[in-house]
Length: 299
Image 1 (cartoon, rainbow, N blue to C red):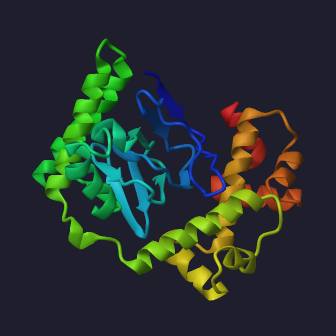
Image 2: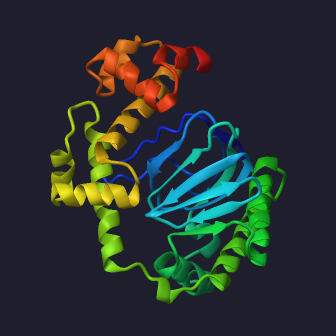
């Protein structure tokens, strides 16, 4: 099983805002990644799979729903299915992390199995959106070990590695279900409603980033007021909606700068920056260097 290196994390989504990347195969629905957050952040996205991560270098800030965590080398985190999340490295720390993204059926099997009914269904249905494994509790270290074991087994590609991957992830799921408060932490109606609104607005940005986007446009896409739009972005993503749009456009532009020979002005226009000078200022504001400097560095 190959490890995917992700240094330019521009994600493709469908019309519902769900990530389009196929994590693994239908026969073995799990994928293994090694992300370099020293170059680019992982933008806001969501997927149906579960995700387990261990920080291998530096320091990272992880956002899941409305919660944010700062994690260091050796610590980890778990993201539940369907949860909006993002990550960025702390400048100067050379942050990297490795992750395992797996469909619940890899561990749970069919919906009529004891594994699904007793463990996966409660975890997905009433478990927390995310779990930080900061080693503050004894079981955290064991959970991190299981994530590492799954990732290393996937990297080895040795005969029977599939059994070792599934065994380690099964142990991880068991640890989570044994140590987290369940039915009492069922997400409230308000939290679920806010999550759906954010997904609708992010989907609008992903579909219309090349055009002018206003707060009013975003609010209409989620059928809410402009003030409610501002509140949702502040509480969930932590930045104003127009700042998010700018960051999204710059992220797309950085991918094109790294992977194509298009002129810088053309890339800017394609990503929604009709004025080249503004594109350069916005890119420098977010990346710390100009588009031309970025292209030279990555190519």
